[in-house]
Image (cartoon, rainbow, N blue to C red; front, side, top):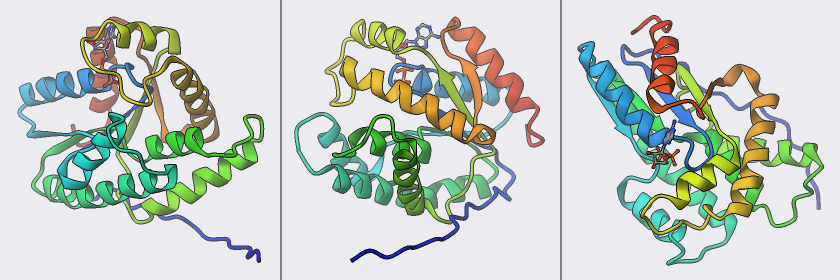
Length: 225
Ligand code: ADP
């Protein structure tokens, strides 16, 4: 049986004093590096800054075991776990913003959309209508979530990402294989094209300090900073 359902997904604007900044991009694009550098730079301007990492808390710890390949669950279960984790994290973010802290988050709901498309068992690589439907179903998990004041997309090629990840001394996660990075690169490209108003794209191939400068320039144009 099929039902036709149409609904709006609402996000809430950030009404608090703190700025809410999200960093998106493929693995190795520099999100965690930049989150730390932005924190230091904003603290020099006397802002209080909190960095939120993608998988904190109890559910997050479980998600990390899946990403590390130690535990296996279906793609859909992983998506729900990630959403549940973000729902718990959302309360902390709101508290920090209310306290006047700036919150920088490494990955937010756009990551969930990108990885859900990647993981969909029967996705047609060329059928963008299908991609959009999967995107909408994932975004519905984030109904009433706070929209960042700015979402940066750190744009790097999958080649650069693979080189950077290969030179890091850490075990690779399940999404850090070259073939998956190539697919996720295409999905982000599509997302940024499909929802252009939601992203500020920054060239992540530039030297680290140049990327930070560019991010700071955009952030300072945001009223609160
Ligand atoms: P992400 O959090 O997006 O996965 P990281 O911040 O962990 O990426 O960066 C991955 C690797 O790439 C790290 O070794 C980091 O030092 C390096 N790196 C980050 N940004 C740059 C850059 N702009 N140029 C060169 N190397 C970078």
